[in-house]
Length: 68
Image (cartoon, rainbow, N blue to C red; front, side, top):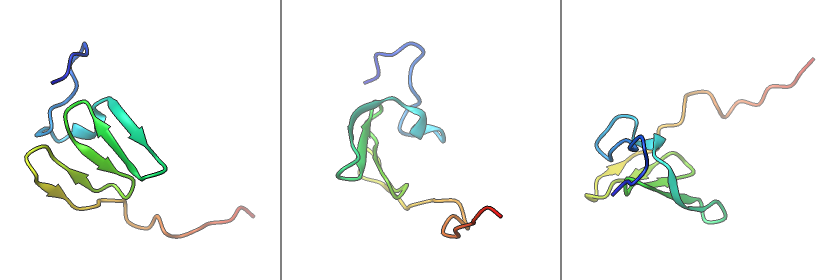
């Protein structure tokens, strides 16, 4: 699917989120990557084969810190 040089990571690769955006709709909370992956703003993913990757945000990001 990818025509870029160097080629984007495939949907099966661990670094699949590194593929280029084909369509980006932040108002709807999703992006379509060059490798066919639907990437959601909550970090969940839908792969081209229908497999669902649960959101995988880093732990502790819900804490707000203020500067002294």
